[in-house]
Image 1 (cartoon, rainbow, N blue to C red):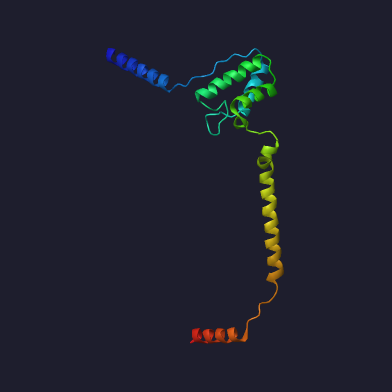
Image 2: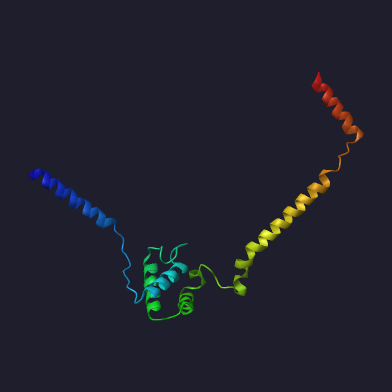
Length: 159
């Protein structure tokens, strides 16, 4: 009985040590109101982590993302507007932090490029199909020399 108690105690200790090692830090920021919490989380979802390739501030585990999340949360609780917070982040980290870049002259290719490529592809497809329909119905003429060569080949295969 004493041996079983020690074994169970050792297993509990071992299990608690492994779960402590696998635990990740959790942000425990307390917002002033639930509306601020919704707004802060929404903004953090819209902003990209400058260190990570394609994760927003909520999904990223990097220290930079954690610091920026807290910065966004504090700014929301201070009563700053969404545009003001986004302007602060873009002035500090550039347009990279925005998942949806602003419609400016330098971002026209981002916004209009896919539409232009789609229209270009449709135009090429339309021209290709039209050429096939027009040229596909005309019978092909074979010259007399080609016909004789074809007859020779066909007669040779029949033997």
